[in-house]
Structures are given as structure tokens and as C-alpha cells.
Image 1 (cartoon, rainbow, N blue to C red):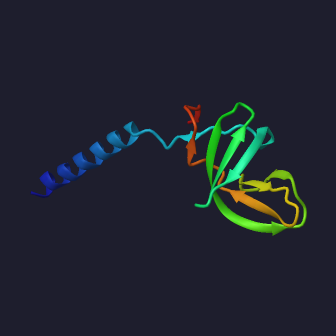
Image 2: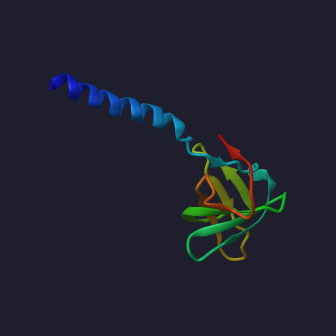
Image 3: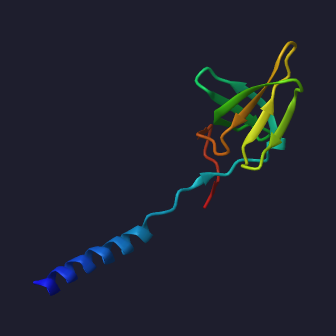
Length: 112
């Protein structure tokens, strides 16, 4: 009885190992360099539509909105988050975006 239960457990482990390798890893959308950003529009649902030089639009989640004194900059921080600073007459804001877009306007290449 113990031998049979050991074989059953080993069989389940073997099936789990074999099928686990067949599942592809999570693929991430390859995004152009932040220096290619041409336009961006914040949305009311904490999303940002960012247009790049190739006219593709990517939707990013806004992680943080920070009032700033300087304006009109694009930076990338140590965690690869894009930091966009708006140009405004009275008050500029810095939008901190998630590094991986939630959606793209058309089919784009993926990083494996």
C-alpha cells in the first residue's frame, strides 16, 4: 500500500514538472525608449495614454501624481518607472507610471 501511494505521488509530481515547463513564461510588451514619447494624456481612471514616435499608443497605470515646481521633463527612475512632468501655467505635475503598459493600440513585439 505504501509503495503504491509513493508511486502515485511521484506520478503527480512528474506530471506537474512536465506540464509546468510547457506553460510559457509571462511575456511583457516591449516599449520604446522614453525619449521617443511624443504625447501623453492622463485619463480620469488613473491611466495615461502615451503616444510614441512610431504613432503607437500605450496605456500605462499611474502609480503616483506629485506636484512639482519644474516642468516638461521625461525621466526613468531606478525601478524603470517612467516619470513624466507636465508643462502647466500655474502648477506642474509629475506622473509616475508603471514600467509595463496595461495595453497597446496594436500588435507590438514582446520581450520573452
